[in-house]
Image (cartoon, rainbow, N blue to C red):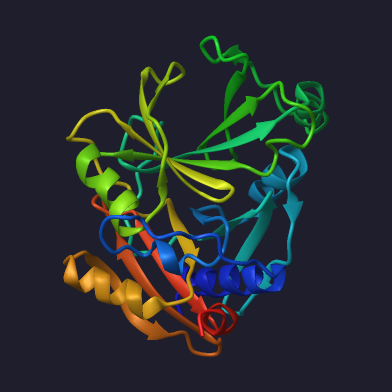
Length: 300
């Protein structure tokens, strides 16, 4: 069993334990996966190459202030670290040999290039960095929005954006934004809007990266698309997106009808009450869909 497969299992089982319910809605025009989106957020995974993942785990929990969840040890040096950031679970698994990785910033490659977290208390966040021997984040204004932004690197060198919202405590902490760099905005926007069925928000100019940002939301998680050119190398391995669905057969049927890249076909995951299908978006970024026993029963 691959570490990536195990990541699906524990993400999905974690969602069941949380007792989530569906907020998905069908788009008016055409058929999409939207009606089958059962969990009111998307979960996100990131692979790491370090022999010791504890510094990564500590950075996202102790420094950034998110909740550590149970780490799954399935033997064979394969483990899945889990962090809860609001309603979104972040999953960390080791690198796999069947994916391509590109280091560097948001504009260096296509793929999942940025996680953005939101805070109301800048002083408390800075204090956590300093208490762990890390340089304090350097915040700059986000245009004239009243928000502040700082870019920091996690222990693997992957970029993380910290936003101070200026809102009362707790009003935006549950939100997570996932930044994807894409090679063809038209194709990627159609995939996340028309196939996945996410809510398309108004494009906004991003003064931090000096480009337009195209956001797509489901519950507490937003995917934001950015474009920096059509010829960037493709990073298909560093990160991906996971959805818990009530009808994985619908995902399979629509994927085949639309001739999408199927990375792993619809199949049960041995040892778990779970059926999954792994798809690639237009840039090969993994989008995997899992139907659990509980999510499947909810549709009946």
